[in-house]
Length: 261
Image (cartoon, rainbow, N blue to C red; front, side, top):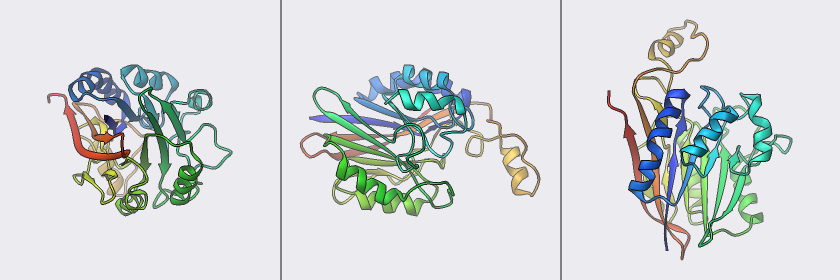
C-alpha cells in the first residue's frame, strides 16, 4: 500500500498562517495526501497561541510539531498536555509539559511522529537527540510508518541524524532554518530525507523578518522588537511517498506554493 505524507515547514506569522489556511487543503487534494505534519512554532512570530494551533488543525494538519520557541507563548502549555496531536521536541527534559512523540492509528496503517531538537548552536536544555531517538525507537510500540521532524540549526547535524536513523524510520525532514534545501533524497537504506523543509511565510524577508530589521542587526545596530515581514507569502514543504510493506520511502518531492506578487 502506498501512503503519502506531506510535511510543511515552519509557519511564520499571521500572513503565513493565512496562506496555509487558504492553500493546504487544495494542495492535499492535488497531491493525494494521506497524512500531514505542520511545524507551527513561529505562527505567533515567536511561539504559537492555542487559537492559532486550532486554525492549523482546521486547515488540514493531522499533527503540529514545535521547536525551540515551543514555550515562548505560555498560553500553549495546557494544550500541550491535553492534545496528543500537538508535539514539542521529545528530547526536552521530563519536567517540560507535553509530549514529543505521537502514535496514530489510521485504520489501514499506523503512523508514529517524533519531534526532536538539535543542539548545535541551539543552547537549550535538551538531551542528546541521537540517544533520545534510540530510546524512543527501542521503547515505542511498532508503527507502519515512523516520521521525524528534526528542528535543528546545523545542516551537518541534520544529515548525521538522517544517516543515523536510515532504514529505521520512514522519513526525516529538517525545520528551523526557514530556507528550503535542494537535497531531497532517499538514503541508502530507504529513509526519505530533506535537510530543511523551508518556511510558510513572507517571500521578501530574512527568514520571515523584514530585511531592513535583520540588516540593522548585522550592521551592529539594534533590531528592536521581533516583527514579521509583510507582502506575498509562499508555502514550503516536502512530500514523501511511503510503502507499507517495508515502511520505507519510494519517492521524495519538494513542495512550493506561492501567492502572486
